[in-house]
Each structure stands twice: as C-alpha cells, then as structure tokens.
Image 1 (cartoon, protein in one colour):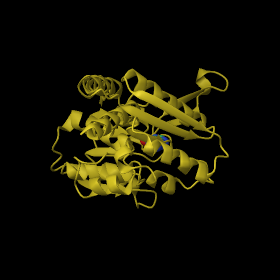
Image 2: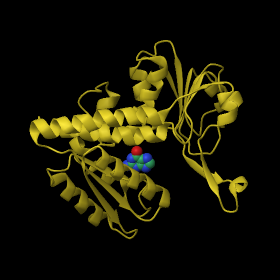
Image 3: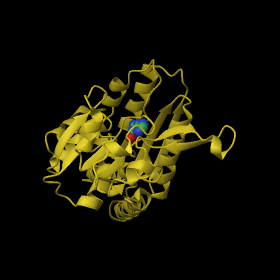
Length: 293
Ligand code: GUN
C-alpha cells in the first residue's frame, strides 16, 4: 500500500512558519500582513473555501478582510473594488475567488490586481516570471506551489530523470504545475481532455498529477507501480451509504485502486487542499515583506 502524503500536517507546519514570520514583521517593522479575499455570488463550495482562507489568515496574525458581493455585481463594481484594495497600503495580498459568475470577465478582473498583491500568481507578470524560470521575485500560484512541496517531501528538490504527467492545463493549476516540475528537472508531459490514450500517458508517469475536476477518473491501472500520485481534485459526490441526501468528497483519482499500485499518494480530503490555503498565507507574508523593503 502507498504511503499517504499528509497535506494537513505539512500545511500546519507551513502555517506555523508563516505565523512566526508575521510576528517578526510586526516586531521589526510594525507591519501586519493584510489579505483581502473577494467572493461574488452564492456558490456554497466557494464560500466554504473563502471562509477557510479568511479564518486561517486571522490565525496567522494577519489583517484579514473579506468582501462578499451579490451575484448581480457588475464588472465595473468589481473592478472598482479591486482598485480600492490595490490602493490600500494595509493590504499586501488580494484574492478574487474563482470561478466568477458567468456575466463577469475573470481575466480582466484578475489582471487588474497589482502583480505585487496578486497572491494567486495569476497576473501575466507573475505567470511570465514562473514561465521564464524566475521563481524568486514573483508570486507563484498557491495550489501548484503547495503540490510541489508535497512532491518534494517524497522526491527531494531534484526530479532529474523522472517523468511527470500533469492532467489539466488551466492557468490556475496545470500550466504553473508543469512549469514548477520542469524547473525541478522533471521530464514533463501536459495531458488534457484532447490527449490520445490518456491511460497510457498516465502510466508512463513517475509523478502523476491529476487536476481534471472529474470524480475518480484516474483508475488504478492508469498508475505506474511505485509512482507518486498527487490528486488535486475536490469533487462532492452522493454517498447514500452515509444516509439519505448525504455526500462525500473524492478526488480525481480512484483512491483505493490507485493506492494499491502507487508508492505515495495524497488523500482527498487532507492532501493538496490544505496546502493551497497554507501557500496563500505564505504568499501574503512574502508580499508584505517585499512591501516593507
Ligand atoms: N478557486 C479554486 N481554487 C482557487 C484558487 O486557488 N484561487 C482562486 N482565486 N480561486 C480559486
């Protein structure tokens, strides 16, 4: 059976480091890191994530501000709010929770966030820095950065000679994850919905990263024996065995099957999920440090 990669424990240790860094910043420079989280609309899962982000920010000793806007918010209203947050020197990080309601243009909103406050790493400047191998001066997208820490906990910093397959090519996860793996010298394949014989491609992976948003899509016989499996999916599915109307969270990987084949695997929940929040806190304290100079 595979080693279970404990994202919850790793995230707790990152958060403790961030809390101490925030304390140091307060003592040395009199500055409290500030994080603003913006959510538009009523999606219950998004609300749960955002509440968790705001709560963790407080636990880290940050100034934590949450803006909850109604579904019918206009593009101009949302961009006006981002402009206000950009101009607020007490805020070092701004996160607009995605997805936004369909009538809003996410790209325009995200690109209106100042790159130095873009703790999601989604601005063209931050994404471009990562793509050109500058991992030092920008901000890196939280879920890939957190997934990479989990990969490193198994393989160390140098992935030379290892084949990594990332399923999913989003700006928020797949693309930056591919860049991080490449930067660590892995041989990277980006797979997606148009990939031919996805099962065979996955089976070539020493490190298999699944971010497709389809419950339990990656089967046990897609996994190379001895592989490391990083499951980025968080899918809610019905769980009639738990009672009428009950549901449970599963990843993009068929966990029981895959863990019988892999050498190491992240669980859902308790794997990548907690790392996203921890890295958001890390990005915010980094942004605050840079603002102090
Ligand atoms: N929605 C799901 N994950 C994320 C994330 O990491 N950042 C933002 N902004 N929205 C998300």
